[in-house]
Image 1 (spheres, rainbow, N blue to C red):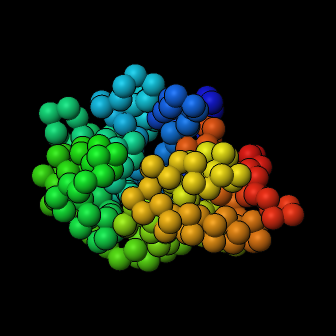
Image 2: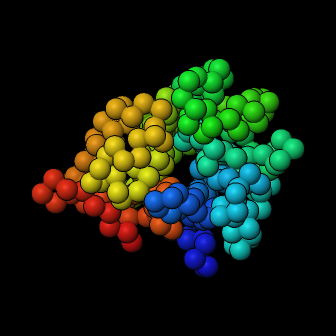
Length: 252
């Protein structure tokens, strides 16, 4: 497979990580990874990147799906771990019409309620949510709004991880004794291992996000959990290590 599409299995689940490109910050470049899960005749995509709203370095998901013969109409379900611009903008074209014509969308009740609420006084978060409020709300009839611990399919379960956003979740894949924890934006960069507050501007509730992150990282390190991270270098797969109280990333 090309380096923009990485295949793996988790028990009975066939998974493919696709790159949507990258996000360039003045201080750092972040990966932008999406994962497709194929199970029981279903094709479930977690997030869909920037789409046509990209500034030029992202929005590559559809092109990279084509490299392995996957088309937008193949996708029947899209799980949004949260509603930030780089996770949902691949849902719609510039005219607002759906990119994935046969997909239903899954989002948590807390996240949907936050998207529905009026913008607040945090202009950074208003920017992160502007596209969700403008384009996702008109597609409300395509959404299944669920609890933050909902089982989507046997072995595919949402895990509450609030703080980064009010309804932020992870997606836990478990099958035949194998497990992959899709942590989304629990951590954006290895920099956060040393300085948990360095990217706090990305978080709706920074203190809550830092507390959630610390617990999840500690649990993953202790248990040796196989992890998929949205913003780490492609394909974003690896393990969290903790040595003498210091966390680090061990990519595959």
